[in-house]
Image (cartoon, rainbow, N blue to C red; front, side, top):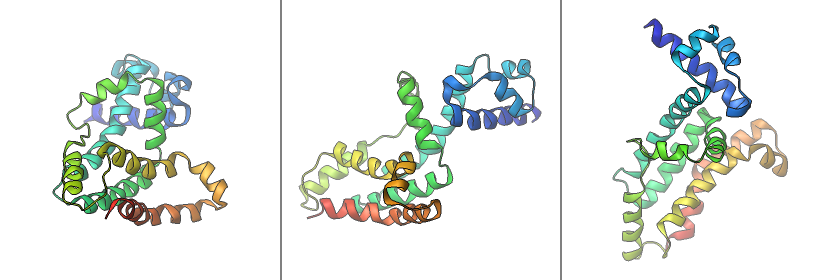
Length: 200
């Protein structure tokens, strides 16, 4: 139990520092200081900064991946799926606002790491979503559209307000509280926009 507590403190400290400084700007000594342990003990748990970073990254991604998978693979129809995906995703990221920037920044820095993530059993799959899009087109429910393009549209409209927050706050000229209300409203606005753009 003591070992679990120490490791959790290390991961918590590392997450906070990696989020602010990124992989390259972080020093192991900073993480040890933040976790209130000595550097030797930190190296006992994680032999290198890369291994520690990968543990933090997997921990972060493991929070997000089940949220995506849950909606993508449930039995709801396409429109309900789009609505639930948007509401669940935005609600989740409001609680974990560091995640989108952290994931995107570090995948760009080390794209090879994505190969390790894809090997994880809970890595999101859009296979069922693609079948639903194909069926909806065949049944005349939605306009012809590539499932991949539709999925990218959904992801983009949900993610960008978080990764582009400072720019968007300046462009629409609102303070943080007002912007948070905009994000809350997007739980329904994004889904309505996408559904209205594809339905016949």
